[in-house]
Image 1 (cartoon, rainbow over the protein chains, first blue to last red):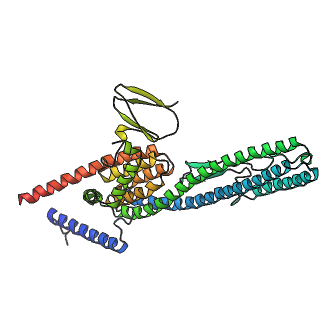
Image 2: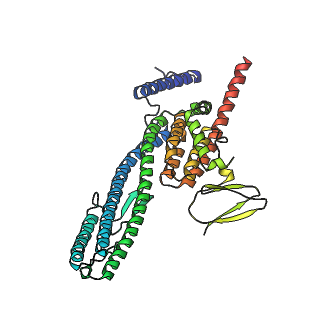
Image 3: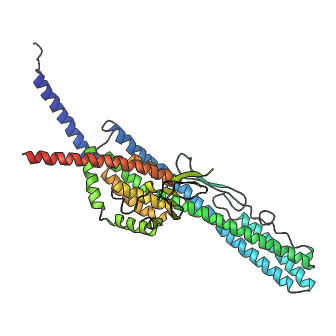
Length: 271
Length: 141
């Protein structure tokens, strides 16, 4: 039997039929999975972008853990500073108490109490760590903000021991002379100032990390919905969607609150 | 070495939390320090931000010019959601913007947002052209 020869017309019809069959499997596949792009072959660019979005969400989630650890570490240091400040203030009270009496025995007792307080300060500074990092005993904390590590915030540790940054001397000479007391008093005032500025810088670092943390959390959510949407992307629909969004958004609450926010910002000067 | 800015007569510029208006001569300023700086041509207001991508730009601009960006994050993400739902193909761009905001490079985020506005413009023009084509075709019947 000879070969059946197909005319050009029949051949093109056959091709079309095959295409339709392909389209039907594709549609069924989409219906089954709910996604228009199921494999790299359907739409390579969207497929890989969607996949990288999902990957990104995952790697950001792990960053989020390290950010919340960092927040706790800074908070621990902050609490440490608050407690140390209280101890320094108690020490100040001891000094002024000693200044009010001339009795050497009382002064000696107060001096012993003073030294005991200083030991407590050192112990507190040693215990202000979280997860192995203690910002009050010289450890530095690096918080990574993106997944390739190109952006990070480093919180420099301090050394809040009596012999370190606080530099408070032990009670000398059992506080017998007025000069001994003045020396202690000067040390304490300086230590308080140091503590205050440390607390300020930790506070600033804490709010930086917290802002990034909040942002990352919301971003992960958007990334997850984003990757699903992208696999559904149809470039022909996008233009129409955009026009619709343009109209719809004009009266949306988001646009209204944006306008209100702009009116409260520096932009109000820009009329 | 500060940032050099040249202002035309009457041109305005945001430096930190104030608006500086140039008088009737050309002025050259050298600005040192770490505050948000935004030239008049790069500033959108609630009135001029009249499209989804421009609104996104405005939200980023508000984050850039304010001390505490947190109140604007919610608005920003609401706008992002709207935008990627309508045009998923904007994702790679928005992703890049997100990343800049996350790492605190707000000025670069604004630059990328400007690119997004250009893309949106193109898309809207195409859509309008197609719509008018369809209308004229149905008109012929």
